[in-house]
Image 1: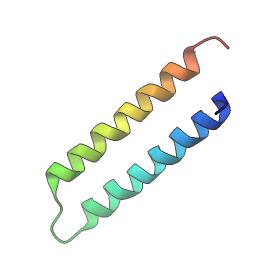
Image 2 (image 1 turned 90 degrees about the vertical axis):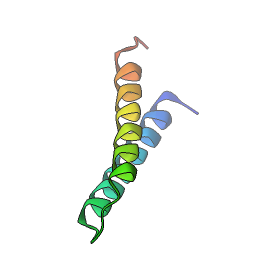
Image 3 (image 1 turned 180 degrees about the horizontal axis):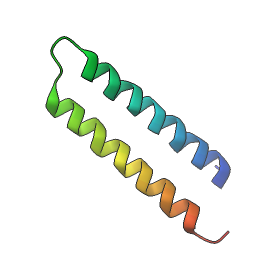
Length: 57
């Protein structure tokens, strides 16, 4: 997998997690533990994107 493909994959996962978080928040009975887990996963992906972007190619 090329670096560009990896970045695109991470961006897609980040967007999917954002959608899942929003869906959970709008739910009639939001699961705060699930929301927090999704937010942690989203943050890990953001951190990885930042690391990848700052590494000289």
